[in-house]
Length: 302
Ligand code: CDT
Picture 1 (cartoon, helix red, strand yellow):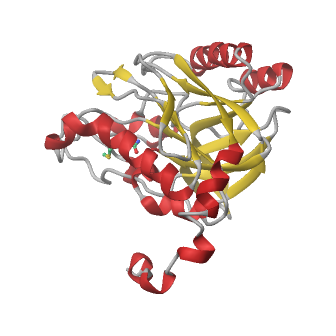
Picture 2 (picture 1 turned 120 degrees about the horizontal axis):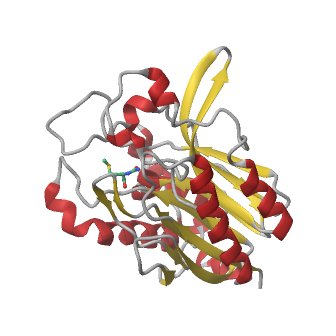
């Protein structure tokens, strides 16, 4: 047995006027609760430090960039890293990352995995950027991730917390390829932060199913790859837009073993035995024995 005790650290809404410092204080309160419950690791949502800004169309690049972090940790986030090190707990955090690569400014929808020492051990940049790139005023609200972010380039895994850990972000969880690419690398726990409005402007007929689809995709990804999945929302009514909650921990069986019940700041706890992955990875989803890649070529053809 290899236990990782995990907290899904759900956040309620973050107001546009809320400071990073105020949000970090909320994250630290959840971190303390997680530690008091014996957790090794707490998973926070996507873009956890600010309101979900892709819902607004901005023309002023300086205003857009005000939602991004230029360093991690930075002055307002350092306290979270210090607390993690002091009490001995790891975390996954989603945030907007501004970085310069070969003289070119890049902007990513990013998550990091931080060890109990407070050191960053892995960084992931969101691959599947949903929504649209141009202002679409007919929508009740925008979803401009394709305008504000560059896509990341892949799904790696990292040995940490006694197992093989992976990360994805929000819309990535709807794509079976996300889990399979990490499954092929032996992933045992996939951490996923999300911001998912209940209302989908191009497909309002899906609105009543938004929470069902959230769990459907993550439960399937867990089972089909013999891995734990931890999905964590920024939930509730944020700047007039209602977001699903439903943060949860899913076992390799595909079963939800812990979940949040509110749409506010809340932790859901689970003691995960990573060795439960083995029976799935060795039998039904023994990829070396049963996969038929010769039949899958179309998946990666354009
Ligand atoms: N943040 C994020 O990726 N949200 C999307 C919303 C639906 S696509 C406009 C999601 O897949 O949950």
